[in-house]
Image (cartoon, rainbow, N blue to C red; front, side):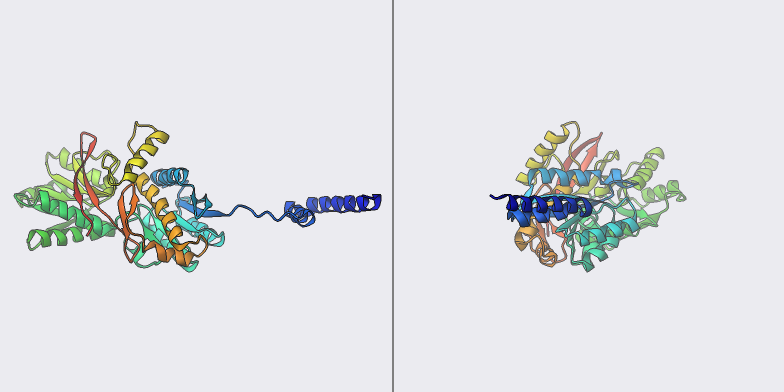
Length: 389
């Protein structure tokens, strides 16, 4: 090579290096590829967002959902021959922050979103995902509005009324003959009210009774002595209480303090809490091998987190949400077409998950079995399985 050509190449390289200092690495990368003929493309990735309160007041409650997603990602790290990249989107336990983060996910070529913890935040972000045609999967949010008003949101947990109906099925099976049932709920909680009313209606239908009483209470002002004594006078010995654990525990502890013994039936709110001697509906129990994936999940969880604590329902549902996301992407044969992925979410049938065999209905809700757990002296056992309708 003659000296003139060598000087020319050196001049070009020096110029390019100076440009890179001024305009950033991208200029140098482009120059390098153009000059030396490099045409190697970056390895494509599939972005799945963990849309959760990683900080703030809800962070602790959401931690198990995140743990389940991460565990599934460690075990199933690719789809359509592409690496799956988890994108962490912190809602900071705040609705307005969640909206901002949701829009960033829409703008960032995310394939699908998992989360968030909390019905209110999930519904608020749902409008943004719908407008941006970005599919999302709720994990433990049971409000029917999440899926019924948004074709881009699916879920892996049962919705509110499903839990109430399963609880009524269980009650009719074990506490119909020789027992008298009442449903109670915290007056200000519309979700709990809907569950109590659905439970009452379904149990009345199953048992042939005209009406199952539904009573509202205020945990700060209700005279529980009068309330409980009225139940006893009326012969009510079994109580359905669909409120969150912090409210339910106040009521149950008050009954014990006053010397009343009732059979308590609740919902998945009570999973992994210290509420004892109760029955509650759930999607998952670590000791119940609902599918082969349940066993696989339990073993993987124990290997990563140890055997001191059994996996929670939220962790199992987080695991299943990730599996459902992969299944929808595979069915769509695309990680880029959000509208197509969303349409495939509602067609998934017989997906083996940690919480059972999952078949999605037209609204994006799972049709799968539900179980009833009984907790006695801190030990949880599955006592009944409600088959999917």
